[in-house]
Image (cartoon, rainbow over all chains, first blue to last red; front, side, top):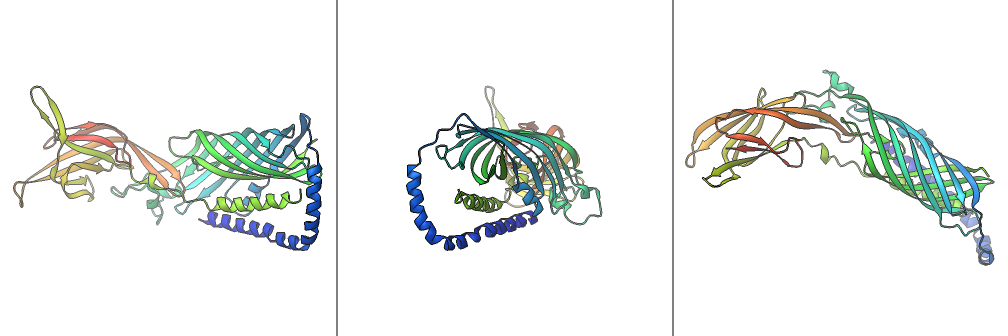
Length: 255
Length: 169
């Protein structure tokens, strides 16, 4: 619950921080823009379509959203880097590597812990490939794989004096009154998934870009331990049949 | 290009807000797994044999060794949901029958005892839904004071009403 509240707060703060300056800029530049827009439109119409060569550079980037959310209270974090190659300014074969993990607990002191590497392999298609401005509007596909270990422990079930909580974990038998012990560390999982991505990438300085990618993820196959589901899959998010993820990257163009 | 930068930022925030509004877990899967038993009787002739549903007039089921009454004076019983122990892999249930002849006074009492041997696996679901104990019958013994026999149809207990055993009278 606390995590959910903090996520709301983070979202609202970010939303206000980025949205608030926009109207001020618009008012100040409104007249100039109106006149310059017409001129720009004329120029854009006159711009010839650009033909790009096969190799247009290699981009490397890191996701900064997950560390920011960690600072604001997220229990799980991943460090992720990506590399892609610009082919004809149209196709972007991409590889993303990361390592994620974290700890969490609930009101009944059920403690979980997970950490594992992951990678994604895929390709993006730039729908603005004819444009000369260099900004990208990408749609793409990824295959993701993560394999690692996770722990689930209920330490309070070992304490007969513990008051409250344990009954609510469904491990205490309400009919016979006895309680199951549950300590499982080092449980293993492997998960494969596919992602459909939509994203944008904009130039912010010479060779520096920032990119936003929305990812809709679907589990393809998962093998989990006999004694429980993993709560968190690095690179995928909450263990479920599908999930939504976002990466927000700072990207450097190598050449 | 300058237009695209605030759009990228804005979309990030909007999407983040939408994602943060994700629904809570559906915890219907953590309901206790039970054995579902159907009560039947068999008719046979020289050339044919068929089984049909059978109703017990009044049934009580006790968890042996406790004060717990699992089924309390249920009437015209033809199916049952029976719990198995979480922490011990042997469950003893006592079936107490009351038969009526006519409309009012009970005429006949008797009991059967069923001992289920089973394998328990406590299984973690999520932090919101906690655990469920998966249970599978490995063996059973029973008296035949009233009941005739028991057949295991599906050894895995569930919380969706799938038939596990048939109890013949």
